Image 1 (cartoon, rainbow, N blue to C red):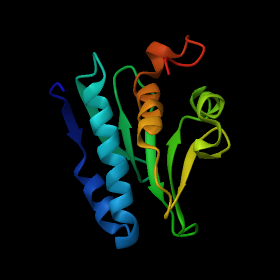
Image 2: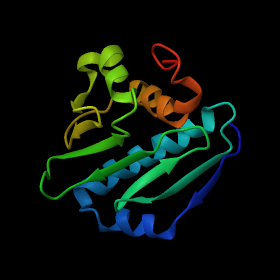
Image 3: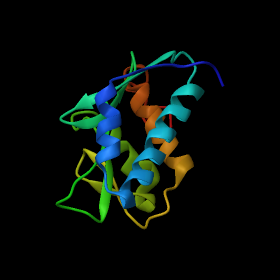
Length: 142
């Protein structure tokens, strides 16, 4: 694994710290998967961790913004969000079918008790973090 420069907005830590205890570890696991995946991608040297719409968000030079959040109005789930105008979620549905639950063309939704298929999710994260390099490929390089 190569070195990855992570530029973190300090406000992101506050958001993670404000999640209920039952959710914080789940959200931290998603964060760790994003960082781990970014380190494995050839050509990705910087990852920006910031807030968009108050949600932890991740962006690379050639990627599409990836967000994640838990919302109190749906306490039994949390999600990873993708740009809804991209082909990301429609491609994930095609390739991973029932491995994930989806919300329209914008999110992969996880139940609090779900075991996350980490390898499949890493493919999704990689597609998002490299989207502008792979969007011309039929299955986004997955």
